[in-house]
Image 1: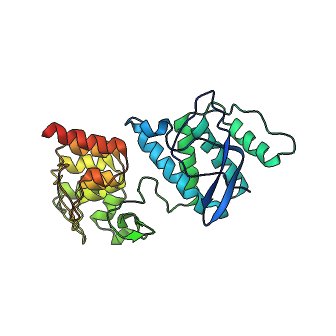
Image 2: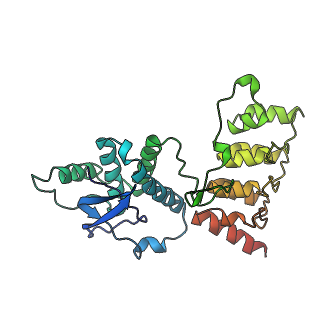
Image 3: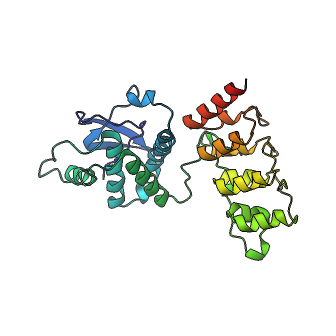
Length: 298
């Protein structure tokens, strides 16, 4: 089956755009032809002037998913590819508004029918379903972690690996420590341990990461709030000089970035490599939020 997924920026065509220009894309070491229904325009379209909004982060995750798919094509079934194709077209072109391919264009008809079946599915829903489908194909892939930047800074194929916090093994209950409970978002256990004075809220693991680092890395906003209420050091830095704000920014949890800023986090603290929190994220919403906060304090 021909490749269905070129790597392009998110762009949605207007109702009068049939998105019918065909093109070839190179992926996974081979040229895979995009046949039948074609693709949408690339750089220079209205995607280049998108305003900062929550949709922006979802769009950037979608783009990462599109870039991931060529490496998964061999393992995906035909139905999975059609599922992804339909949602890709819905994001790029909106609802299907082109004629059904001819009787003998079997592949074209399948692709058209998959796209047509989505009807007026919203942009957000189509992107979300596409991202979820890619995660099912590759459970190790995390759309919230940029492949270009990461806390560990280890280069792999031109980009850093994801945080080591995501590379873990199953731990028996009797062997768990406070960081394990924090990772699991066990708010009750962590809260009781802190209140009983059995655990220092600012205790660090072997890499200098405090509980707040873990909560922010995992997207546990409620737990992060609890830790801050118990006087967690909001600007605590790990062994690489990164704060919880660096972690939340890298993982693109905009709600936690906002929480940290409102709670007094310092966005001007640099890590050991000289990076500010705004420089470790590809999410424009977060970058703008951090820059505006810094400017407001100047």
